[in-house]
Length: 311
Image (cartoon, rainbow, N blue to C red; front, side, top):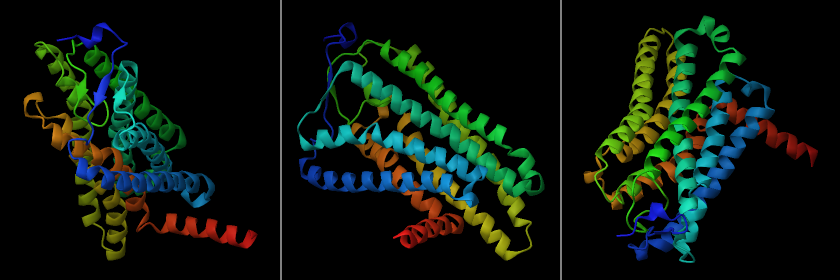
């Protein structure tokens, strides 16, 4: 078979959901609405976090980074998917595939690290409330945010480099975007050593952060249970519960996809799992964080009131 690495002029055919033609129209409608809500919800959080003084805190600083990350992550895949579902063009160039792989891995890896940072912020707020302002000073917040982005891009650079060094045979990807597990299926010779290195890199960026988050929340739960006020416990669990739900949605689907051995990876299931963390999770995050958040709701009401008064 042809080794596609030998010629960057050759590209790939993205099968997408063409093997389920009866679902394509429904998926176009669902994904279009979901993408619109994702853009609106995450852009609103970023704007509110900047405009309202009550939201000038570490929690909303990191939340605005998460929202920007989700905007970029979903935009790196959804336009390509909508074109694919329309049937206009199911191809992607070799360079475009490499770029999409690098960008999606970078953003996904960054989110893994950023969710740990947000868990640390919640740990400091609940377990060290008297020292919270001193711990989460602006310099540290900016350093943690920058570290999340840098760490994510370094991890992606390593994995993308290892992936593209593999000899790939074939041009058909049974997926809607260029993702690591599906590209590994095209490896046309024994690459056990390289795959082992990539698996270790994926485990580090997924398992280690997940373990840190679990440890943080174990301490948080223990601290909250010591709070005598029922209202205080509800507020703490409400604030931390939204973050824990986002963590569960993201890590659950990502671990399912990226920590499976190549031989047991199901292409059909993988496509639907990818829909979850590329489309559904970024759409739900703004709702999860704002549904029971009185600060964000108050900031939104103030913006709407000022706009109505100006008219």
